[in-house]
Amino acid sequence: MKRLNRFLSVVPLDIASLVGHRRLLWRLVKRDVMGRYRGSALGLTWSLATPLVMLGIYTFVFSVVFEMRWGTGTNRFQYATTLFAGLIVFNLFSESLNRAPSLILEQPAYVKKVVFPLEILPVMAVGTALFHALASLAVWFIFYGAAYRTIPWTALFLPLIWVPYLLLIMGFSWFLASLGVFLRDISHLITSVTAALLFICPVFYPLSLVPKAYRPWLYLNPVTTAVEETRRVLLQGNFPRWDVLGFGWILAVVAAGLGLAWFHKTRKGFADVL
Image (cartoon, rainbow, N blue to C red; front, side):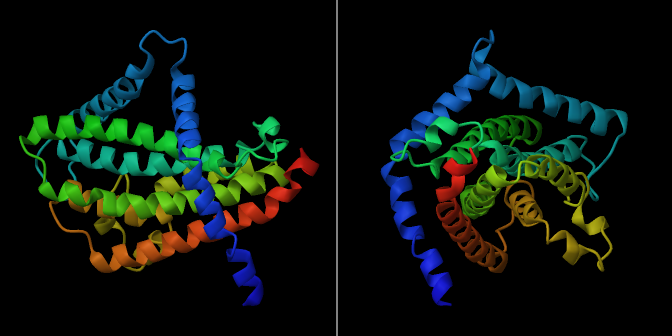
């Protein structure tokens, strides 16, 4: 217990560092986002054009060609909007985690700078993924509003679902960013794991289709709860499940604290490895 307390004692200091370097973090996220579209004719417009094209494809293929419906729904747009909402949540997770193991390896110059707060690099990657998620969400709102002429007011609860989800992702990202320095193969492993998690998460299918005996196993996937709760407030017009949300906040804070503490303790060995 004493070791754990000492291990976690660095967390408040690193949180203060993150807050103190918020302007630097903002500049890094902005540079990271702009760097992806630098040299392209449309620039940042691609951040909206890409999800718009994908949503159009999902609507045509699943709703028109295959005539798939979500649950007992009859609206041809229901499957596409439900699927896309789940994919937005999952892509936020997968984009962040797939980048995490290589973040420190790609910035060796920062490791040698004693004053540079390395812990903001994983947060930068999550911030970039969040930008793309918000762009996709904007497209979703436009499409959903045009198709249904209304948007459930319960969408206002979405931040209560996404904030702990982002904390959980940052916890994983800090851990993987550190681990990726010492184990180079972890990057390939995480890519395979996130690809597998997509299919053991109710993104392409409703959770009600999964036999009851197997549903608890799907909740071991950290994305499942975020996907289900996001759909509750965006599509079903229901309140979040407060008990699930409360447990999610506790789990997210613990995961973020442990991930940040782990990163702080292991960063001393980064320079030796690089």
